[in-house]
Image (cartoon, rainbow, N blue to C red; front, side):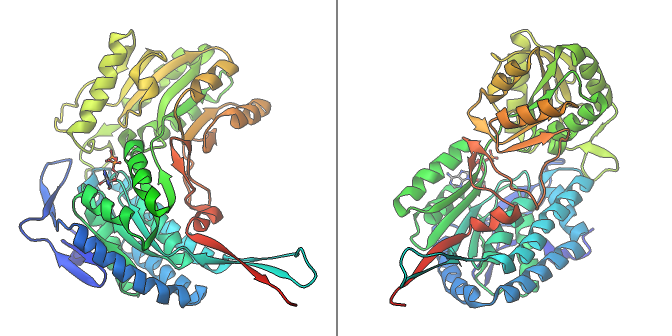
Length: 481
Ligand code: ADP
């Protein structure tokens, strides 16, 4: 079915060497069918060391190139991703489960980071600062941080890689990547295309294998100067701890617990549409998914009915089938979490308006679910569900909903719907989140800084700020002038 079968490569890339999977390899399965897609090698500390060594050597030559030379190669990589978007989307759906159209959307979104940072590569400007003495001049230059380790999750197997590799390579860094064990083929396909684009050997390695062993070498290495991670907060905290002895720069995109607020004056149809995009994209399996939907009393029933009615028209199924909107969840653990949240909420007084069970298709397919009468004491109010459950909380006053929204350790995305300009400003300022969607459920784009505060992480990805994460500032003091 792939136009170019060589993109589904059953091998990892260590420096310049492709290491094929053997019979000790990791089996990758399709979450929609349970079928085996292929195998990747189970590599460990030694291969990670070798990749870091290759990255260190390659990075010095890469950094010495002009920004334009780097930009041209990145642009070629972008073009190849676009040319092969259908194949990349198919690989993504096979290993991750999201519907093909959504997978294609992720490939284009992922590619946009390579394009954006290919452009930004040439705009890493320094500064000349008026000095403090007549015989001195102060100049600030910006240099690549060096070798970067990246660890990425399964929910965006393509875009979470390009969002890191794009700016890192543009800045003049090298990257050693460990993709999620569930979705390595999307990462490997990107590396195949990067090679075809002319990216010099050693600048991008893809190491597959046990996370802990690979992570320990990455975080312990003196040569690795930065770790960029997207995943859960507990793992992020552990990696942060492991990076402390070598004082690495860190970028962490961790968990979220996004509030989605619907005020009485909102355009309700737009709010329902936004809630579906925000809550149910990737079947609820994104860190910016609405996790708590707060609806003001005056529109609570109307909103709940419109939401449930709309959900009943959307198809659950294999992502390769036409019209599928909801694919399978990634695995049984994900199903268990969803069921746990529903049981906890209903046992404490919430009601099921629709859904609530494993779908008739079985496996890891789950019915899109709406819960009403949800309150702050339920587990779903404080924990990330990562599944297709929309819990509706009722509120009366602006101040109450802001306080409830902020009552979480997380601070990644938040959303609200209102037509009142003053309220939009006030609530936008008061929400303690890195990102606020106002009358929209979709906020991610290469042009904007993506990232969170509090336990949701450190740093920003995308935008002109994204490249700064891979840069060190150096100050040159010229004396004796
Ligand atoms: P999720 O629950 O979304 O799988 P994780 O934080 O467990 O989130 O995983 C995100 C990424 O972190 C994956 O690539 C995973 O393999 C990796 N990972 C998990 N545990 C560790 C660890 N102890 N050290 C390094 N990487 C890890």
